[in-house]
Amino acid sequence: MKRTAITPKDQRGLKMVSQGFPMSENTRCDHCEGEFAPEQLVVLAPPIGDGEMICKRCIEIKLRRAVAQMPSGDN
Image (cartoon, rainbow, N blue to C red; front, side, top):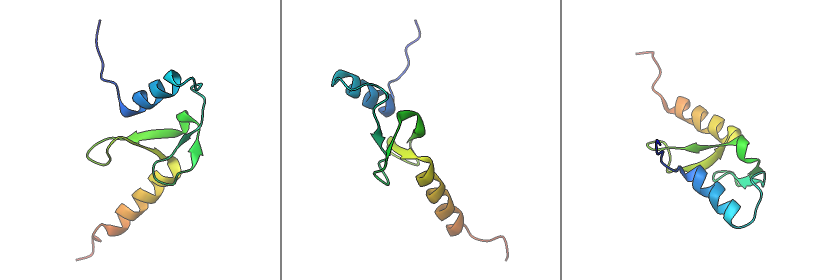
């Protein structure tokens, strides 16, 4: 049997199940603190993040900020 690593998202889900919460329980985005269904969040893996949960809106904000900080192609 192939073994796979448990991700932070898996650990959070396992913790919720062990505490008696159903998996459909809302989870907080670690950036905006908004509550979302687990399927609406993703885990930011290194080197971008440290396994924190993030929603679509916060990902868009992070991307816009990163693009704004990029040097323009005009030299």
